[in-house]
Length: 357
Image (cartoon, rainbow, N blue to C red):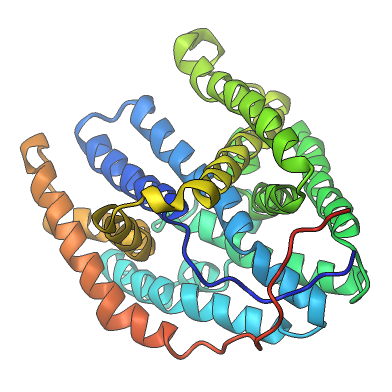
């Protein structure tokens, strides 16, 4: 069946809550890490970051379908993504570079062009550590749409797109497994080209959620993935002696974690489709706000810690969160939103309908 298409601009509140809670988890974990530098808090922050990958792949699914369905919109997709991500990122990069005296340093340009984490030498001048996940996102925004555009036509079915997407995932899983021979677990986790499958897995779940017959199957598969994911995520803390994971094991775990979170995102999306009426105005408003400020929270929380809370104490945590909320709200409405309003729009098309094949 051919695609019938137009992007749905309505926000799914459940997914906005996931985005916001994940960003807050990262921000709180990094604050507490300065008080209690124990692996558990670093681990929690890392797991929260992992949520962003399949979530991005899922929520951008309709825009990818736009590219395939009408053989246009590739430039619009790039423009919309870059206007959404780059201005705030560059602002945060400049500010944190000024703080560390790294403006126009070699590492500054590595961050600017998202090449810092292409090399295992990423630990040198790693003064903006949260940027590694954004590098994965930006490379995905370029490579995956180009791959899909080059390998599909207007007559391509969603089944073909699903197979191509799974193939894209397997390519980078294989690359990670091959690289596991180097023995560098840290680079396997944050090396840009080793993590592109984590976002694409979210797109795979997006496609699966559109198949009418597959919705029931997806629910069962997602439930199993949730159970598996809980074990994968918490086993290192339940059994401390396995926390020193081997590279090959790490390569496998880094495949399972996005499957877990991708299934969770799909489940919440499918549940909301059926129960949207249960979201009260306050619940909906809070979710929208969390989603809007989440990007600024992720980008600027380290700066707020460095500037405003250099000698962090636990009793200051509420003030830190209040400061974070105020600054990030102002950043969104005064800086990000005016730019977002300038983004080009996709041409209006017939509504996207789930594939029946």
